[in-house]
Length: 209
Image 1 (cartoon, rainbow, N blue to C red):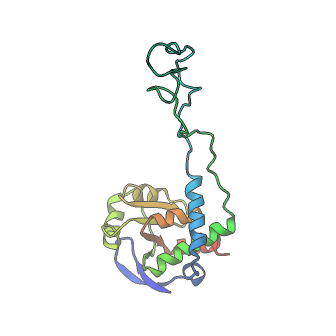
Image 2: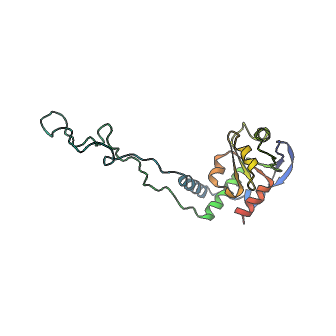
Image 3: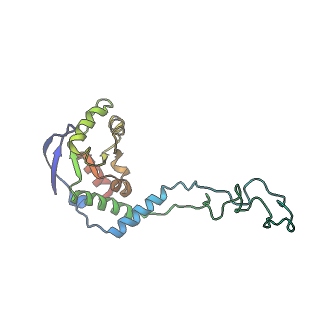
């Protein structure tokens, strides 16, 4: 599959072949959905917590006597019926949302996500991203010509590039990560995928061996 090649200024500079073992995979929606669901679940912190009637303060004494007052009987102000009482069936921080995702499934889902982007013509390849210092304005100018205003974009770097990361992360609706850290959830959360040519090689070596 051939796509246009751009420089970091957003100008067309040629064509590049996308390897079929990465960008032409058959898409299994059930597998992709399962992996994305698992990855989203693994990101849950599970910190939501309410107090039940055994944890709220107060109580220890019957509010009023059982009979003769004309009011409904109550045994404790900790009851869920009372304002300030415990919560019935509320969330606790005891639940573990972690799920195991087999490596083969994760890798397959990444390649399927990239293939779906390629089929939708949402893969943008740059000859390189080269910055001598963090410079958001320069990189944003090129991105504006390529995709900004049309949707969100995930920039995939071949390796650790501090200048590129610091420049890209300040651009609205744009994410950035290294090729080795790719995952299906983040790929599908963004409309466009932007990568230098070297990132394709890094993805192939990591996920398509």
